[in-house]
Image 1 (tube, rainbow, N blue to C red):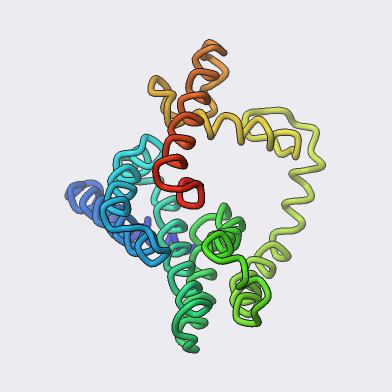
Image 2 (cartoon, rainbow, N blue to C red; image 1 turned 135 degrees about the horizontal axis):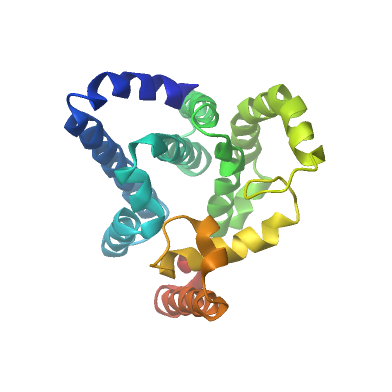
Length: 237
């Protein structure tokens, strides 16, 4: 609902002033990159690596297509508000425990899930806090933030439960058919995707030579391991 409302406003400009729409897309992307930079620094990584990470994010094929394609604003919005929630959550858990941070986490979670359903996975970002210092799993602050982040998602899933059950019980077969059996395959493809330069959407992997996909996977493994050896594995994760 949130993203469609924004898209309705965009539609007012698309025919006569498409530059306005694309400019807003780029500005949103810049805001996400700035939040990412701030978060990486907040998690203890030096500013040069944080800047490099943000630049990689800006030009990553996984993100660029969602900037040039204005209808993909859902992807930009849910990532934006997920990062806002994580920023506030980490501040509450590790630094300054203000109620304002809890309010930001709660409402950012609401807007993220109303931007795109993929936001149901965003509370998993709190794992990063535990990677920095695992001791926080024993604190009341960590679980308070976790519950507040999850509440909007739980209510949304309850609202969507009939449709979800229908999707899982459907016998239809297609590119977007719902099955838990798709999870391992999707993880594999998404891991390879940044290095599959000759496809636009990940679903197109079925048209590729399997050796190209394995090369892409190994390249990503190599990059991840290299970052781990240079900057510690805690940060490469």
